[in-house]
Image (cartoon, rainbow, N blue to C red; front, side, top):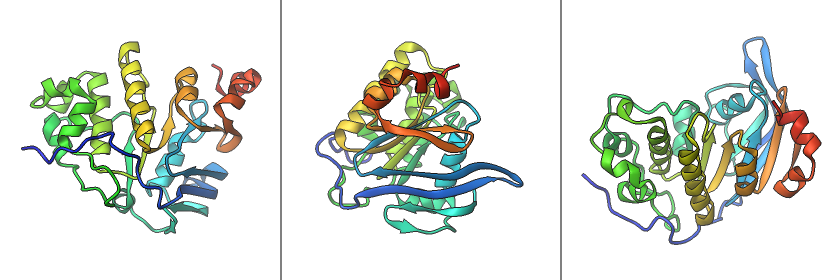
Length: 253
């Protein structure tokens, strides 16, 4: 079974909604343990924005809050110009946010084809190029030889490609990648970064978390660095690379 093929890189996504995502003074955590403190950030249409910081600084908690998996203590999240504090995670996904979660979380007992076709959702606007089964496989040709393989039969790199493809086939207006290349072999990491660059050229709005400073500063337009649940620094790649002391202080091991 195949869905209609469309060219994956024909034209940029419409920027009818200028602002894809805004977090305004968000406070959130787990029970009595507060993790995020007055966290504010925004992503405009067509932007690639990174969220960086050492482990435990609140990056994944931020993603969980965005996806409606974690209730806010205060502050607000505006997705595509709409503020709704009570949205469930499936409603956030339907609204147009595709998530590539940390750890990939593909269905191990479903084949590659089933993992993709199960998540297919038509594009929400006439001006948005529709991702289909065929266009995802065109982006990740390595998966073509694995279509009948169960998810747990894939390598880590193939699983990450499948996780990205699964998010894209929902035809999101914004895609979020949590630890985009963590634990992957150097060759696979380069392939993933090349694919993400193609998405950026297409005009896809992206929020990305990763530790590869060299690669992420080439890809992303702007960066937010978290330190203990707060935005400690924000700016462009040029500004960040001009401040090695900031990199050492907040991102060094």
